[in-house]
Image 1 (cartoon, rainbow, N blue to C red):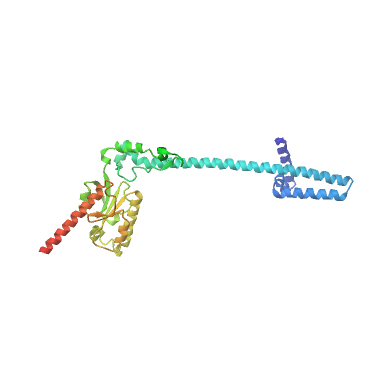
Image 2 (image 1 turned 135 degrees about the horizontal axis):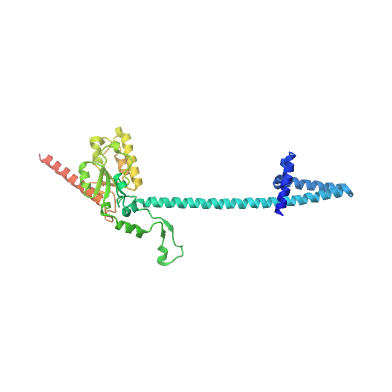
Length: 336
């Protein structure tokens, strides 16, 4: 039946196209205007058949009305079926697109997860000879990107009771991460520190970390992603290549320092500022960007007793020794 109907449609459409009546193709009568036109024509023929009265003309008009009514019903059903087919096709395409988007999202998430675990996996897999020849080294355990963040995927329902209520499904298996860390080679258990400061501070920090000293403002740029600390000594800005960086005369250089600090914090590094007794135009701004500000033998934090932070402790000892030496020098000058 469907095949016959399609053939009739094809023949009728070809006839109308040949006659130049493309606007009257069957598709036209499936739409609102075509159906309205058929209903109006049926009404006109019905009224005409009633007005004419009895006779052959009246019967012909009534037969025409019946035929138009049948054609109207057929076109109405066809339009409804066509609309349902279009809706189903749209739903199928929508479902197909949703599946494709879901696969893309899952693939992107898996790639991100593998990228986040890359530094962690190198602790056990090691690096190749080619990578060693290129100067690549193993990531430090203390590097901000070594331990990947673990996100909650699912958690128990609100009505779950007991210890099961605390059970959560995470993106990373903490036991797997702990196993890799505990089996990492000894050479990766060393912190890396970026330092803007004098050689004396560098020497003291080398007892607890590998120190990469930034010796001049033009070396500022992309922070080392393996550095877990960025230490800035304000005394370094009093002389040498860093002299006057906190003054308005070196505004451009100070903004470069701020950009370096911002990128280091985005990497996950702890920014430590060793405060000096001097004050300059950008001093407060620099200290506001720090994670920890060390003044003498104290620091602006309240959790030193809860964590093991040998870098901070070493800096506190350095500041304490410097202030003691400064006090002795002042005493000697007073006696002389």
